[in-house]
Amino acid sequence: MRIKCPYCGERALEEFTYSGDATVTRPGSLDASATDAWVDYVYFRDNPAGPHQEHWHHSAGCHSWLVVTRDTRTHEIIAVAFAREDI
Amino acid sequence: MRYSLASLLANAVTGNRNWKPVWREPEPKAQYDVVIVGGGGHGLATAHYLAKQHGITKVAVVEKSYLGSGNVGRNTTIVRSNYLLPGNAPFYEWSMKLWEGLEQDLNYNAMVSQRGVLNAFHSDPQRDSYVRRGNAMRLNGIDAELLDREDVRKLVPFVDFDNARFPVRGGLFQARGGTVRHDAVAWGYARAADSRGVDIIQNCAATGFRIENGRVIGVETEKGFIGAKKVAVSVAGNSTRVAEMAGLRLPIESHAVQAFVTEGVKPLLDIVITFGAGHFYCSQSDKGGLVFGGDIEGYNSYAQRGNMPVIEDVAEGGMALMPVIGRLRILRSWGGLLDMTMDGSPIIDVTPVEGLYLNAGWCYGGFKATPAAGWCFAHLIATGEPHPYAAAYRLDRFAEGRVIDEKGMGAQPNLH
Image (cartoon, rainbow over all chains, first blue to last red; front, side, top):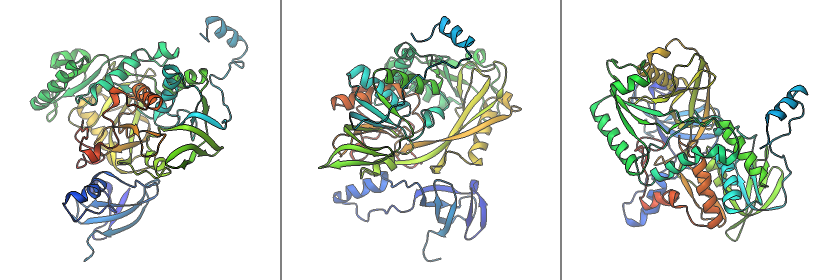
């Protein structure tokens, strides 16, 4: 598996660190009413067999956080984008 | 007794053409008391104990492929009960006790080999942590022995006692641990369940659940609808996909883990050994190949294979522990799918859908748990009450904050 970093180009898997599902959203509130949303955010996952949006950190490269769309059945990388929207 | 010297001889002289299949291949009936989705080790063990311990024999096991095609035939065959936490130790020790009586129970040679499991340690702090684990095991009635360097040298003289970074300083030894022939476990449970009337239906994937008023009434399969009073899901690796068909979301990610076997060599390693400073564990099969594995790949995957970085990591761990393997050639490598829960511990519980039961989330430890998981899951299905040994494996423990973080990590180091 090789990931094409939009900044550095195509690099080997060893340069990247995985950080899981990129579709979960951190709840905005710390109130007790948001407990269920926090449990969902921390523990529960869709875990699709097919295209999966996930965070990768180019930890041995440019240190960009990336959103990689990858097919979990074949490990094919479909798309790579910066996680930040302003660059 | 199905086999004897006479039957062996009679079949040998007739060209081995007259052996009978050891289980039937029935077509599904319209209705069962229990349908088990997933014909792996856990599903078949559940069927066996439902029939044997609870007298429930109107049971079908539906399996999407052939028996032994999934994780029960892909693991590294190690069994042990060297667990620390109260929610885990009694469960895995019960599993160990069931392994010890398995062949007599099933009348099937599963090659249960209690050759001992040695967890090497490499530093003083790690020794302290292993002492703690060993003491916890002994308090739970599990055998554990702390070995110093000289004791380890008697067992495995070839490990690297002088490694510059990770010298072997000793180990925690569980003499009752060992290995079991994994496919034979599937075959043995299948034969035993079949002989009590359980229908094992291969090449029959479940495609959906029929749910009425919040209660499951059957399973849609590739061979049509099968009615059931209770449905038990035991499909590690694909648990979230199957649960999704019932509208459930689980705290599980699917990950791949690899295993390897080398060319066969003369007897070298007569125990199971693990490296304490990385992720490498190894045993020698009866054919002579060294069977070893390492850590999960670390990213979601449904591909039953891995990538090079983990292969390198495993090989480095192996070379640090036992440099003697350096010139062996790896014959094969393969991958299996793991249900990684977010705390690294399994789930045996009821679900929000009435009549639907879940056995999932075995992470890297499903094979050693096979007998006890089947035993406790059958108890839950038959009685509606969790078995005391598996009472901590609740689906709601994540929301309740009662996670069981034996290893201190789930699918990723920051999740637990």
